[in-house]
Image (cartoon, rainbow, N blue to C red):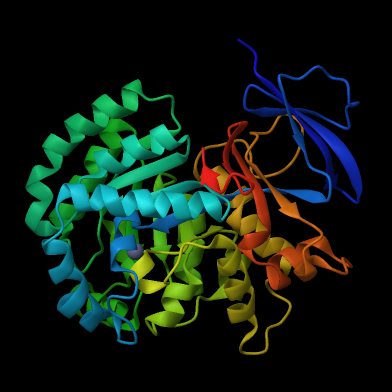
Amino acid sequence: MIQTTLINGAWLDGRRQNILIENGRFKSIGVPDDTGADKRIDAEGMAIMPAFYNTHTHSPMNLLRGYADDMPLKRWLNEYIWPFEAKMTPEDMVSGSRMAMDEMMRTGTVGFYDMYFHVDGTARLAAKAGMRAIVAETFFSHNIGSIDDYADTMRGWNSQTDGKTLLAVGPHAIYTNDAESLKKAAGIARDLGSLITIHISETKEEVDNCLKATGMTPVNYLDSLGFLGPDVMAAHCVWLNRQELDLMAERGVTIAHCPCSNMKLGSGRFPYREAIASGVRITLATDGCASNNNLDMREEMKFAALLSKVDGDVECLPAGMVLEWATRNGAEAFGIDGGVIAEGKAADCLLIDMNDFRMQPCHNLIANWVYAASSDIINTVICDGRVIFNRQRQCTE
Ligand SMILES: [Zn+2]
């Protein structure tokens, strides 16, 4: 049955417009009031914006928010995060994911790329919530033996789902997986046509150790194993040189840039100008809640834009581009023809309150949204044509 929704009078391209959604897509923009849609959303005083795709997170880590702060990555992982995680049950993980999804929906995220353990629970929750999710089971050298069992689970899930939630493979990093383990993980992903994600060059120490052990930088090392391809989502990528960025662009790899996490763990500054010049696809992500400490993608846009300017390069990442990283590029990475408000595209969008004091005056809507606003001004979140959050009801639907 055809489902239609009319968004009535939303601010778009400098004027109020009616937008008709049909079966999860923007059917037409600028339609009259009397379209006879099944559902009508009054968007008086609101602007329509593309929704967010958070391309790297660890949703169960919402349980670790504020558990360990103000220390470097190695100590943070070894002394706090990994011992805590060792005590978490699959039920705990589902509880953390539930908190994370509620937070993401309230802050305008319709799709997230997760990396954790016992991920089928998270995938089921996301499907129930009507969110888009790519959920990757994490592998290390010590548990890579279990990947064949996981491959069966993944094959079963991915063949039955409508494509909105997918299971994927997530070898943690090059310093927690040996070459055999990395090749095995990539081989399984390629055999099953699934997506694959990994942390790459998050710290300088990771690069130095890789150079010492292999004579290659992490990206060149992974490429020598046949790991890199268009199915790879590479998180962090702080310590990459131009040659590595060019290689990633050539292989079709997507970067998940996590500015808050990189700053909080003191990992370093993403090479903005070089990455943009290379043409590699860059998306935006929060990382997990223990290293951020929230999942607010609007904040992440502001932090990315400001971090790019901190050394004086104030022009390389303007507000419009960082918005594209958080929306259109994320949609592309999810394999969705969306991330923009245009006819024929996936109906993933936000309605935001233009009357809020942070949106006035409105010389430039995108600048206000990136630099001045707060996610509190998000009134409605629509994923695949369906309302998944509405502020009046103060609930996720
Ligand atoms: Zn991570």
